Image 1 (spheres, rainbow, N blue to C red):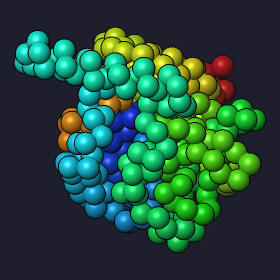
Image 2: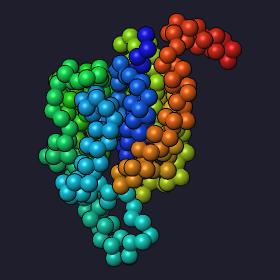
Image 3: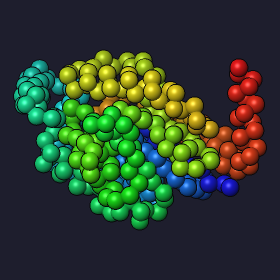
Amino acid sequence: MKNISLALGGGGARGLAHIGFLEVLDQNKIKIDAIAGCSMGAIVGGLYAYFGNAKSVEDFVIETIKSEKYKELGIQKLTKKTEDSNYLEQFLDFVGSSIHIIKALNRASYFDEELTNEIFDFIPDVPIESLKINFFAVASDLLSGEKVVLSKGSLRKALQASSAIPGIFPPVKYKNFLLVDGSVTDLVPVTILKESGYKKIIAVDVVKSLENPNPPKNILEILYRVESISSYHLSNIQLRDADILINPDVRQYNWSDFNYAMDIIREGEKSALENLHIIKKFYNENFHLLRIKKFFNKIIKK
């Protein structure tokens, strides 16, 4: 058994690091048997399962970010302007963002449902069952408070639900659920893979620690930061079931820093290359020997 499975964590723009990580796996002919993704990890993982290679995912994402439709959304305005902007530009951006935030207080999210649907129009609307790789997206149900795993039906719907950041995107109605971002219940969905019978699991976590050099700049970033803290503590427990944990160094980026997409992707590539010898050995290692080693390592640590 050579094939491995991946658990790709959420983190907004930081999740683009998954693309660089997957590109290195492709270059080294390391085949993926299944992917479980949360939020941006679900988007990257879902697109990878759809296209079958990471280069196509990168081209697709970069083209989307550069499109006029994406620019019109103003997501980049949720991140503070640089000091190169003059006072008037910063003031006008502040006023514009403030008006949107005030309006958002009267509805469920910063972006309304119509605009959110336009945002996710770029995702292929195909059945998950038709993808080239087994795929699971994790979302969180606001009604029951439980994790919901989406492995059948519309890929677009699943990715929209998994990445519906509370306060920014509206909840997604699906069957009897009201779904939001999967990071609320399972930031790096290792457990899904284990419960589904996959034996070799690599987890990629783009939120390495609670420390963040960038203080929140507005109400949306504060809400996102609070949710990230909660998810971090939960994921630390869930990550124990991963055989290998990869932490791309992307902590300096905010969730909305999509203008740094290529830099973030390269950090994912760097993290894969730094751990490539371990990943290759893991890929070729006998599963039973691997489990014996893990068992004795646990005993030694105790």
